[in-house]
Amino acid sequence: MKAKLDYAHQFGIKSLKVVITQYPTEQNGQIFICQAELFTADDRVFSDRGDASPLNVPRGCADSFHRIASTRAKSRVLSDAFNIKGAVIDDADMSPEGEGGEYITDAEFSPIEPMQRPALPSSFDGGGAKPASDKQLHLISSLASQGQVSSEDMAASMFGKTLDQLQGSEANQLIKQLK
Image 1 (cartoon, rainbow, N blue to C red):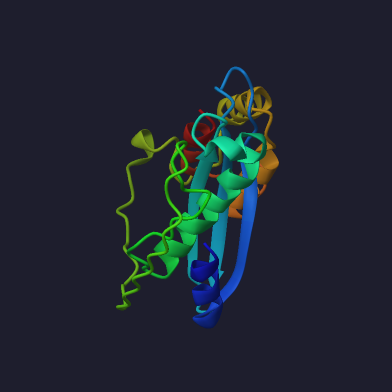
Image 2: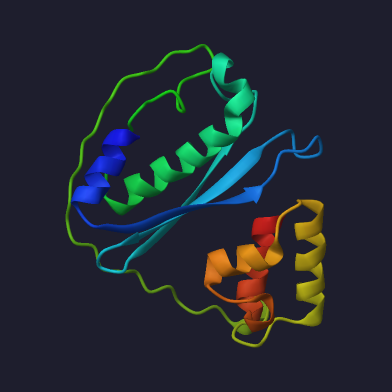
């Protein structure tokens, strides 16, 4: 992870932030989920998630699995942003048996044009560009409450908007994320 972060600083990271999207509970199997968002110097944005639970981290890290979820999210977003093909295997990516600790970094750069996704018909996309419906907003609030996360924070993190500014398609994506 340190090698990836150092590489990113050398080649244009503007900011890297991590937001908690799920706190561990008995209902969700004690899974802690973080979302990392990276902004590059040329204003590209990359986002990815990392999860961890006491059952999927090295034995000695079970008490601090929340930090590993954050590390995993950052590692994934750094790999995507800077096209690092190999993974840096550190204590966060070790198997529960304690294997790992190798450092493999293989970066390859080539310009990639952003992909334009075709617009989906509004009937298949949660309302498309129309404002989010009251039903969608109520469901978002309910799901966020159950998952003990802030729906406002998730809307800001995912779309840079408040809940009342969401389009139907964005509300639909947020609902899928919360489920």
